[in-house]
Image (cartoon, rainbow, N blue to C red):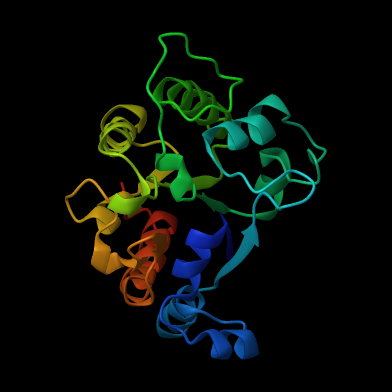
Amino acid sequence: MKKIVFLHHSTGHCIWIGKTNRYVYKLTGKGDVQKFFSHFNRKNKTDYRISERIFPKMEPYGWNNYPYDYYNIWVKHAGEKPYMEEPTLEILTKEFDVIVFKHCFPVSRIVEDTGSPDIDSDIKSSENYRLQYEALKTKMHEFPDNRFIIWTPAVNTKAGMTEDEAIRTRDFHDWIIKEWDEKEDNIFIWDFYKYETEGGLYLADENAYGLNNSHPGRKFAGRVAPLFGKYIIDVIESVAE
């Protein structure tokens, strides 16, 4: 048996449900990602159990799941006790074999660097993000028996961000893929940004819930939900790099 937890907010919830009708989801509690796992387990006689969790919750921590917040909870306040009711990696790694986490699309509202990066700042800048990501990588390497999957950043529609913010987000994405990621470690990258942008700078209009709403649209979510599920299984079965 392998246990997986998916930590998310609203963008992740859209992919978790996929194209499943919202009323059906309320009745059954099963969205596209869970259905993918159920089908895979039946077909391959495996026992991969996936669950989802809002992280961090609105109260008491606040509705923020950006690089600073994972650093704040998992690195700065690491330990055997929860921080503001949120589980640390010391807690999560005891319960789950695979931990999947992500940021919602406001992560892409990246401001210009100042030249004075601050790891303890919640300002959304590339220089701060990079320090926080390096600290998170070091922390995740403390748990070699667990595997971690992080999504590349979700992005806004063109109406929801400036071109400069979009370019900074692309550059941060490229840094994650080309520099931050280390081969043959226990951290894996699911390139959500690639699916959202389709080679552009913004969340493609046809992939968005609306031109002024940067949540994933239902059709797009239904298309990528099984890709997400497959990637998790590839990580478990040591197929993904």
